[in-house]
Image 1 (spheres, rainbow, N blue to C red):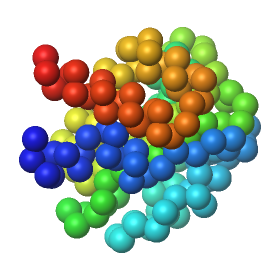
Image 2: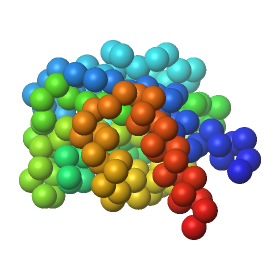
Image 3: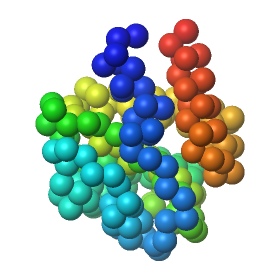
Length: 163
């Protein structure tokens, strides 16, 4: 794996973006707005524009994917090539109606911020793969520590790469 690819592993993207617990809010808009205030400052990222672009995408169609998970993201990449892509993993303080296909309330979300459509799809495919694994889902539902989540994701990515 090259250094660039290593920077785009889901584990590395979440380490960069952070894990956020007990986010207050009663709607996806409230939740995302509150997380925006917690995100680290990234070169080339305007957090207000990120929030606006993500909410515009959310208005087109919910990013709730089911099983209590959502994957909010802007419709188009908001980072240039020099930007640092990241994924923020968040846990609302209470499950939120995110209009998921299965009617589940969202207890965790992966906010994807990419530099390109290709990198976005790569990240989305990894999240989709991981959300099919009961071990990962149970860790997320249990809201284990950031270290435990990232270690489990790193292990799953290694297993995936070995196939």
